[in-house]
Length: 312
Image 1 (cartoon, rainbow, N blue to C red):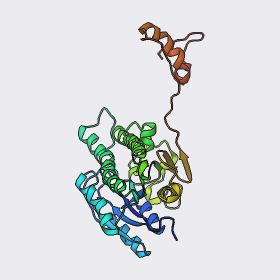
Image 2: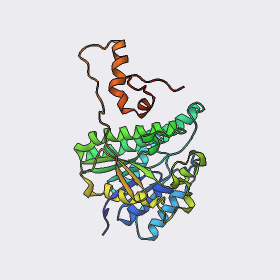
Image 3: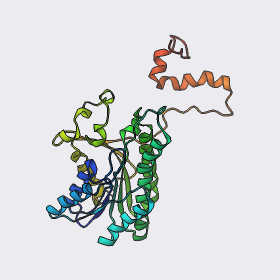
Image 4: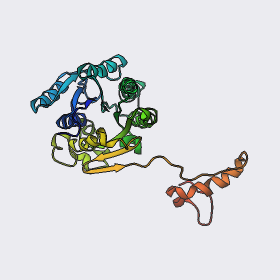
C-alpha cells in the first residue's frame, strides 16, 4: 500500500531532474502519473519526446501506471489537453505539480525582451495554464485536490543574474497564495516549493556565482548526495497525500535532508501618522524609525546622529 494509492497526478517538467524524481516516487507510492515534458534544452530550445517516454518506461517497468505528454504548458490549448489526458485516462485529477521551467540568465542591464518573455512565459504562464484547467475540474468535482508549484530561492533571495527567473518564481509564490484562498472551499490545498538540488539548471551557474558549496556538485554526480534531486521528491509525497489536508498557502524550502517552512510576509516596522506627512518631517522621522532595521544604516550613521552619511 502506497501513500498515494488511487490518486492521479499530472507532473510537468517530469522528464528530467526534480520533476523526474517526483514522477517516479509518486508512481512507487501508488499514483497514476501523466509525465509531461516538452524535452527542450535548459534555454527552452528544441523538443524531444524521449525524456518523458523514458520516465514512463521506468514507471511501467516496476508495475506503475503512467502515460507521457509532450505538450508545451505555456500554450493554453496544450495545457488543457494535458489535464484532459488525465481525466480521459482515469476519470479524475487529484494532484498537479508544476515543475517545468527554463533559464535565460542575464544581468538586468543586458537582458533582452525576448529573454525576459521566454522565462516568464514558461514558468508563470505555464503554471497559470495548467492550474486553470485543473481548478475547473476541482471546482466541479468538489472532491479536493493538491496543487504544488515550484518557486525558487532565486526569487525569495534575489539572484542578481536571474531577474526574469526571480520575477517568475516570486509571481508563482503570489499565484499560489491566491489559489490557496480561492480553492480552499473546494478542499484543494496549494503550496510552493523552493528546491535545492543539482540539475541541468544548476550546471549552468558559472563558478564565480556559486555561493553555495553544494552547487559545485554537477547533476551527473549528485546521485546519493545531499544534492540529489530525489531528496526533493520525498516531502512532496506527504504534501500530495490526504494527510496534508491542513497544509496550504505556505512556502517550503526543500534542499538535501532539510525541510524549511518559510515565514509569511508580516509587517516589520510601522510609522503611523495622524495627517498628511510633511516632507521635512519624514526626512527626520524616516531614519529614526526604520534605520535600526538596516545594518547598513547602523554602519554609516555618525555617532550621536539620527541621519546616515553616504559612504565615500
